[in-house]
Image 1 (cartoon, rainbow, N blue to C red):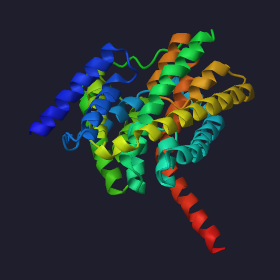
Image 2 (tube, rainbow, N blue to C red):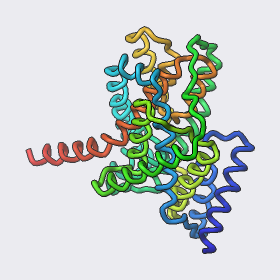
Image 3 (cartoon, rainbow, N blue to C red):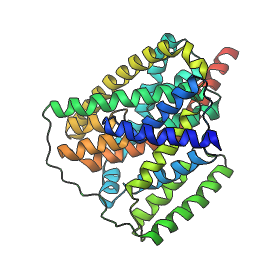
Image 4 (cartoon, rainbow, N blue to C red):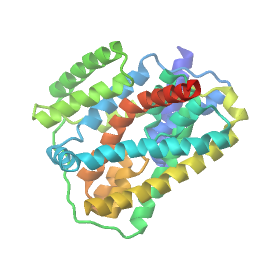
Length: 345
């Protein structure tokens, strides 16, 4: 039990430290970097079996609660734009993968999954399914998310963009029986998705279950912040255990590749967001947040503070997360098939 206790204790301590330092996503980034650093140094940290799935279960349920009636209406009104934007995000990431591969010198498959704008957990798991390097992809996405949440919200705030869109999220209180009921159904759905070999089953299935509860008007419950923080700790801890000593010899090139690729995707995504805003006759600042390759919660919090259309930003960010989880792996396989077919021709 000593490796598990050591890893969990280190994760909690790192989460608290990063929280005190006001680092973005402290409860996931802190454990991941602390546990990852110990792994790179050869300490051999170990995550509790099933901890990653438990964390994804809670996060998936929490994401589904974003789909209030107002967010659902936004998705219906702007469905075509949201759908187009989600796939455009994958295309921008794929273009960035060419830059990433050239600088880092890693394989095409690892470069692809390290550059697609999804969450660190989701992309690392998809990369593992495809045969790419789990540790490299998780490391790259964590640095990208840090860079995005440290620059985009600050830049939008300093630009002076302020809207008038008021938004109150679901006011559902914490009701233990509804919360446990939703979790039980989410667990059953996750096992079913895993049995069907659906990627990211433990995130996607709970998201769909929670979304169904929220949009259908069924009794539901909020998720206490303590549960969400604990889930992030478990996910960050699990990701950190995949960092191996071999990263020491390549981290410099990897960091440079990640920073330059992240800057490329930020700039291109911002330009795309402005163009989309002109087409939709919406606030450019809101669409920059909506299309930014960063974290859902950070972009939505920024939009809420500046009153820049939280339902719109939420619908874009959540839809892209779902599209990336569902389609980035099949699209990679399609690209490989096309490349092999072109050689045969």
